[in-house]
Structure formats: C-alpha cells, structure tokens
Length: 305
Image 1 (cartoon, one colour):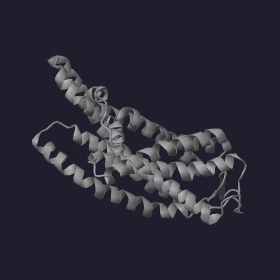
Image 2 (image 1 turned 120 degrees about the vertical axis):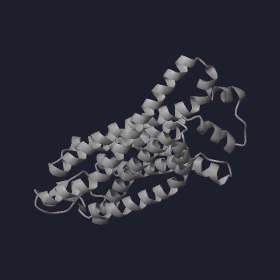
Image 3 (image 1 turned 180 degrees about the vertical axis):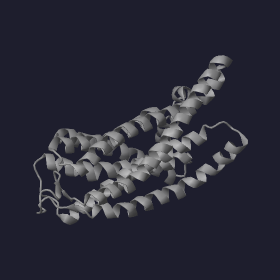
Image 4 (image 1 turned 90 degrees about the vertical axis):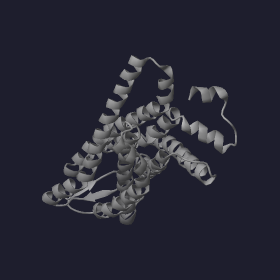
C-alpha cells in the first residue's frame, strides 16, 4: 500500500505540476492562451492540492507512522483535502459547461453566450475558491489528532487522524448542506455532457451524409477536445461517486483499514489520470511546449493536428 500511494502521489504531482507550470510560463512569456486553459490551470493546481494533503499523510500512515499529526495538523490537512476536493469538482464542472457552450451551434442567442462566456471564467473561479475556502472551515473543526481520547462511540479513528462524531440529526443536516453543491455540480456536468454527446452524434451524422473531408478536418480539434473533456468528466464522476459513497458510510459507521485505504485510493485516482489524459489528447499542449522552447513544430505534427 505504501508503494501504491507513493506511486499515485508522485506520478500525479509530476503530471499536474508540468501542466500548471507550462500554462503559467506560456502566459508569462506573452503567448496567447485559450480561455479554457484558465480552467485547466486551476484544475491541475486543485489536483496537486488533492494529491499532497491526501497522499503524503496516507503514505506515512501505511509506513506505520500513526501519530505524526496533532490536532492543529489534522485540522489543516483535512481542511486542505476538503477544499481541494471541492475545487476539483467545481473546475471539472466549469470545464464541461464551458466546452458545451463553445461547441454549441452558432445561432444568435448562442453566439452572444459564446462571446460572454470567457468573461465569466475568472469571476466564477474566484467565487469557487472563496466558497470552498469558507465552507470547509466548519467541517474541519471536528477533526482531532490520532491520540484523541474519548468514548469509542463518539470518535471515529482514521489512520492518522480522528473525527469527533456529532449528534445524528446534526450529521444528517450537515451532510445535506455539504452535499448540495456537489449534487448541483454533478447535475450541471451531466446536463453539459449529455448535450455535448448529442452535438457530437449530430455532427457525426452530418459528416456522414455530406461526405466532405474538409469539414471533418476543420472540426477535428473541437471534436477531439470535446471527447477528451467527456472522458475526463466520466472518470471524475465515477471516482467521485464511489469515493463519496465510502466517505459517507465512514461518517455514519465505524470504519476499517481497508475501507479507509480504498476511499483514499479512489480519491487520488482522478488527479493522477487527468493530466496525462490532457497531455496525450490535447493538441495544444505540444504546441505550447514548442513555443516555450522557441521552436516550430514539425510539419508532420502540424498536419496531424
């Protein structure tokens, strides 16, 4: 388990750090970025914040170091875990919604929406960061150090921290409050993803009927980007749903070692996979790399895009 968590954390931080630094360096060097790159930069940063506060303590716990955090340390680590988890969800939602707007048919109403959408990325991002930073202050208050003493029926012991149970009615109320933003984002992602699948299907049928290769070639970057985002959303929803089920169960029942480690593994899976999925499927990433190195891309690579 130590090797698994170490591999997840190391590989994930490497991939997300590479993309975060690439987008930042491209921006600072004066090259133009796509509006969607602002969301991707925040998503990769949120992924790093998921991996480090979750992966590093998990590695230390599986190595047998159980009491390396005190009460303050547990509150900080758990707070960062919750904030980064919420930001990852919100940025994935924002990514899918923005891409759905981007590929929408060019009608009068959609053209106006497409024009305004990039202007709302920064305000939406700032709201998301502020919202999650403030909301998760309250849930971190119940975290205690691993040595916390108390009635065994009132304390939930994890590998490196403990959680002080609240009364059942308060736990249900808090669960509803904290689940509402997640449910809203998941609903928006489902709607945007369904809309994108519909547009891709309609485009595919149209290309088959017209049989014009230039239309397919011209649309291929947008189609490829949409397919990548749909795959990202699918992976995220699957991992997030499974992890949420385990987390919710552990809040109401006594947990076991395998349950805690399985939940941690699922939480770390999406931040590990997503950067490499973007690197391998986003044609703009190699262009940014060549631009940063001051070189032109090979003709064959440009033709492939």
